[in-house]
Image (cartoon, one colour):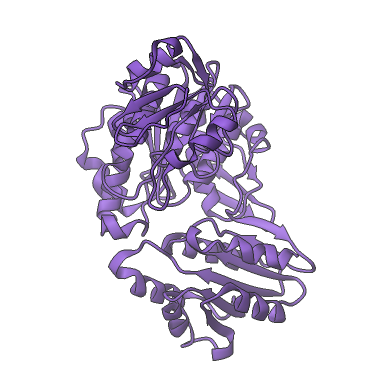
Length: 458
């Protein structure tokens, strides 16, 4: 965990105002949450759209904060406490993360992509943990705040870290990769996400490829070679590092082939003589590609194919991503952490592939962040849902009404239902669930569809 004297911190952040009697004091750890801060940590008050962390300084001190960064244009409380004044607390926190990362001997794998990055991270961390002291991004801490916090939690003896990098706009990943400095970079996919700012899938690809800016000159770049946008964009870059591709097309270096899949997991192998079959207890064919990217990176660090299966058994899965939950007489496929058109299609394909259920229902929330194409993209999903596979469609949110209108071309009106509030949806959903049903629940993070999952389980 990060440790610095306050004098060192003030130098790193180019700050001011620290009283001399405090210079020799040290912090151990950094927190932005006054409620969760631990004794001896540095409190960094962040300013968000609807809050100002500076207003929580009393709680931070009460809970044990040793010092605090402080925006220089915010009045400093008249109390005897170590404050370091900075131009911007978030930028200062990132400066500390960059300095701390450069002091560590840790190897880092950076992962980005519109879909699949969290599962790839979980799988890879499991593989690497068979040989190394390994850390990974917790949950979805993959933005300009979450990535520094992940770095602060790395211990000095951490050997490898697996870090997610997300993006909303151009420059986001550029900023992250330039203080993470990954030794391996992975791009899992390009999909219809964050189109409000990025506008086109071509731009999404360019934004994801910013990860190369911080890649170790002697590092490795791994990407999904079947993705049409990556196939088009990657050759236009002058990449000095080693490049490895994966996918089903013949031009890829690694070609995984699915042997079997069911409600418990998948079995697959590679187009390589030394490859035996691997069994992964994660649902859906798409997990084969996530696992392949993870295996390539793991091999780069000396994990043999023979040890891959052992690593698969050590995976600590992040929740709400294709998570199969047993309820009272039926099952729930909880995939409600995020949603975009490509991931919805993948989830539907997974649902179709699970043959052991007597009834299948989909609950879809609005796919947010799709920009000017949001109605059209929802309509395309509605047209694509197969009535021979799915008995009921329930949707939540105003944009999903367009999905339902298109779905009703092939579904009875009382089998494709649109809602604007969760309680009504939950009440009607409970009425139609039969024994041995499988209910897929998927929507964008802001809708918090896990509340539907919790209601069904109860």
